[in-house]
Image (cartoon, rainbow, N blue to C red; front, side, top):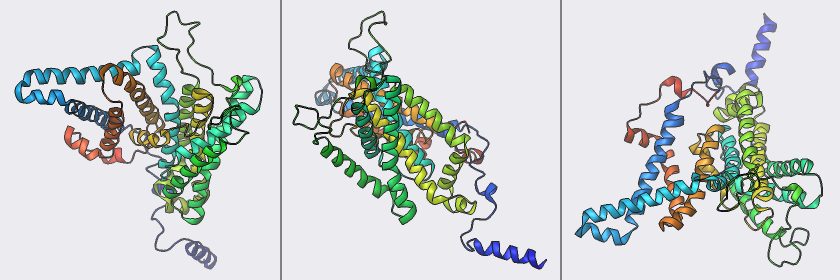
Length: 419
């Protein structure tokens, strides 16, 4: 009995006395191993209503932005209403047709959606582990530069070259993502600050590298890189040679969208069907509980950010080897920041991120058509995206407006879709 008492005392001494969570690991993380119920209200209905609300408010902005029509409301309300309705209808019809109104618009939507999905997954993985990865833009830039070097430096068969380009993007992004993860784990430096700083470092580093002879296109003085070899370019999915009708312009969609969807499925499997995925979600749900359960929280933070960076780096490779074929300053635009909205709209779930990526890709592609056909500024698309984020960030407001019933306690314990 004395030996048993000594062992018990030793174990108790090793655990924090005041901050140790009550219950064993199975109780601490029962929500992560939950029943796998799909909470359609929070995960589907509320985002859908947020999108509808954003479109309604966007329509009001379009209507009030037409000053000539506004003047008619005082003298001829009937004609004013007719013109307002026509303006809003034409704008949204053009937006829809520009997104999915034919093979070419669908091609543009898918082309724009691929890097958005990959960057959104990078942010979503961080969210799952309780980390706010705002560094997707910088990770995309570094991953894209790694892919660029492999793309123009080597001459290989496409079946070898393309996988190497993909691996380069993954590696570059993983390195850039692991840095803030390590700083968070070892020094406590908040990942929001470090990832923002690394975004600026990556942006200016790319600007500098594009002026170096090794990267710069021969005969050019402006910062434009060499083009990746044809063997390293992502093959296009649609070709005018085998489609029995003409395109308004040659479709740009390439295998990047297939890579993005497959990657989303892999991330879903890792998060909800593997041990490491459970640990990622466990450290996000309860870091103290994860440590109490024997998980190495320090290296989990590093691992999560490395995985997130690798996903963003793959998005950068998509831009270099798929859409652009080369690198220019800021060649990823603001995709990494749009990814935050995707992760929020998709509830940090891979399936939701794919759906959100397709939506934002459609908005980006359709916005150009809306500007040309309906004479509505393309900035309205960014306004609609911002409104979607605002409504998603206020689910209680959406539920109150549309009288959506509150979640049940069991639904609140569900950790993800299809778990």
